[in-house]
Amino acid sequence: MSFPILSVITFTPLVAGLLILMLPAERKNEARVAALAAGVFTVLLSLFVYFGFNPAGPRFQFVEGPYQWVPQLGITYHMAIDGFGLPMLLLTALVLFTGVLISWNIDDRPREFMAFFLFLSVGVFGVFAAQDLFLFFFLLEIAVFPKFLMIVIWGSPKTREYGGMKLTLYLFFASVVALLGVLWMYAESPVKTFNMIWLEEAMRAGAFPAQWQIIWFPLIFFGFAVMGAIFPLHSWAPDGHVAAPTAISMMLAGVEMKIGMFAAFRVGITLLPEGAKFWAPIIVIFALINVVYAAYIALIQKDFKYIIGFSSVSHMGLVMMGFATLSPNGFLGAGLQMFSHGVMTALFFSIVGMVYDRAHTRNIPDLGGLVKKMPWAAIAFIIGGFTSMGMPGFSGFVAEIPIYLGLWQGRTLPGAAFQAQPWFFPLTAVISVISIVITAAYILRAVQKVFFGELPAHFEHEVGDVTALDKVAIVVLCAMMIIVGVYPAIMYPQVQAGIAPVLNLFGVN
Image (tube, rainbow, N blue to C red; front, side, top):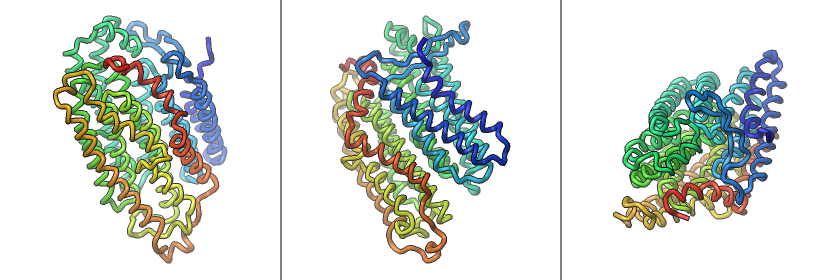
């Protein structure tokens, strides 16, 4: 039996969180150090898995199981990682580590904060490695309760109850809808299993007729896509981000929105490919609204954090768009965009938190000139802005270009939905490019209004620079965006290995 490294990564935060809760309440520093140790440990193990993964090897690697869990219902404990989930595993570890650093100075019950933050990451880690749908949902729901508690206890006093409740209800509703589709697959499968690998084998053998796939695909795909903030059920995301404390905003936008789209791909598109073909144009339309509409709403915001919240919704639209192309470039770009956007938005929310902790306001008209007091934060926000705008040399460029190429490529793929209107996908690409201009506008506006211009007089003595731990988090997140942007080959082969078997379902080699 090989070392169960994926399970160790997944459950290390759970063990660390329980140990932290056993500490006396007054031992605040020990709680922080224990959380940081867990974060460092998961980063090291995730890096080992990432660089130990062989893109030319089997599709699933570091396999654990399947072990019978509830054999009467066909439920197994089965963990494995493919090239598509691999970057998400690393992303989760990075956001956990930097989130602990950013939260170091929280003085209101830091023991409970660090423990709940670790509990939240357990479900996130597990989702990207779970190969059984019951285990997948089990881990997915683990993340909901600590997330709600952290928002309503440590979130923004004015909006935390509304934002926390709205986010929780939307995500519970979405998961219930997706669960209905999953239960149908279980009922229809001749092998009566929740194991996704076995379900895929049954689908390839013809167990799920095309008409049934078309009927049930929307429940599964759109149920999970709500977690990725698909229009029109997207408003939970900016409201939830704004209400949450900084580390939770980083985890929500950086990783948990990716869970929804990862599940829509892994369960919806992979297990119901005929349904994906039929519904692809509809998905593109919703994604297009996400991309352009949310970017415009970000442009007119006066709250610094709401700008980033709506920016996240816009960029997640690009992920959905890439998936809907059902093309090699589209899938590749979507996988890279999930990682790039996760790092970028974690950086953005951390900078917003640093500004708010020192200036005590997020109202952009009340800010200005902060580059004089917080040069590290200003430089980091500019680097994140370049990534958001898709500038060459940053991870956003290498992620977005394949998505737009995939939109053009989509018109040539098999399936009547694509062949009937060959102009549809190119036109969508042209319209979605508008978002690049709008993104540049709101990023440059934020940079100019927040960090440049005249420094308010009362900031001279009230505002200080970021801490050394903040600088470590900034360097880690900025380095990832630059490394992937300059050397995309560090991630391309892994993602391509993960999407190749799925593309085969659509007759694309």
